[in-house]
Length: 272
Ligand SMILES: Nc1ncnc2c1ncn2[C@@H]1O[C@H](COP(=O)(O)OP(=O)(O)OP(=O)(O)O)[C@@H](O)[C@H]1O
Ligand SMILES: Cc1ncc(CO)c(N)n1
Image 1 (spheres, rainbow, N blue to C red):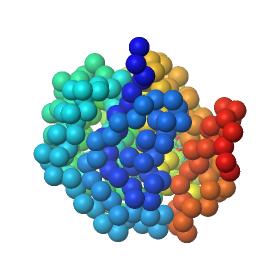
Image 2: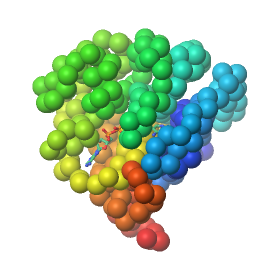
Image 3: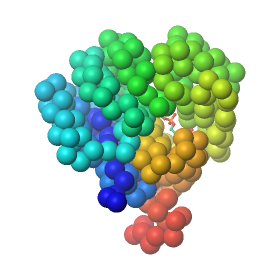
């Protein structure tokens, strides 16, 4: 039996904290072989996004074709798709692979507030990509944009999750990283609600938390874990990575989370 594989289809973050780079670090730490389809190249550091350069549509299409025809994958994570044409081509390709778990992170803005996709792309994500998803993972501001609701409480998160499920994903997690007190995430699959609570950590170093969380879910699904178990592991992973983020001290703005934290807690010797 060959190794478990996970594919990320997302944007590149030159600063290494979010996007493709965060995804591949997470896959490796969780013991899964990582594959990548780059949709866009961002010139980015911990201070902000200084340029976005989309990969031509044929380039996105070709990367998906060659990776999946030869290597294949056990799970797919989708992150930044900056234009509606890119969303369309990714959705078209993935229709053929609907037996593979797909985690859709509807990435919209970077931590500093820079937009990472167009308004048309948002509509296309709801209409073409959500129906293919095993789970979608919006944060609160993204869930607000996608539903038009104002979200300030768990009750509001429940209403938004119900509305998002109507677009056709099998389940929804609304991430509470932007709530004031607790970092509680809400899961809904149309049958039952589950809460994944965590202590909120005071730090400015949370660049890439969403990317890391969704790729940890994809990595665990690739290994065959049940969805709720995968979310629980992802929540532990991101909590550890945020708790030890300040020890990395990378850059002068919103620094990345610390992937070494989870390795250390699993008993691996790491440098820092
Ligand atoms: N300060 C924090 N303390 C504890 N957990 C947090 C904190 N911030 C985020 N999280 C958790 O991290 C995960 C990612 O959520 P978040 O809302 O930050 O994603 P995001 O905004 O999409 O991130 P990004 O856009 O930077 O990639 C969730 O499980 C959330 O609860
Ligand atoms: C490439 C990329 N994807 C996602 C995010 C969201 O954090 C980011 N900042 N950059």
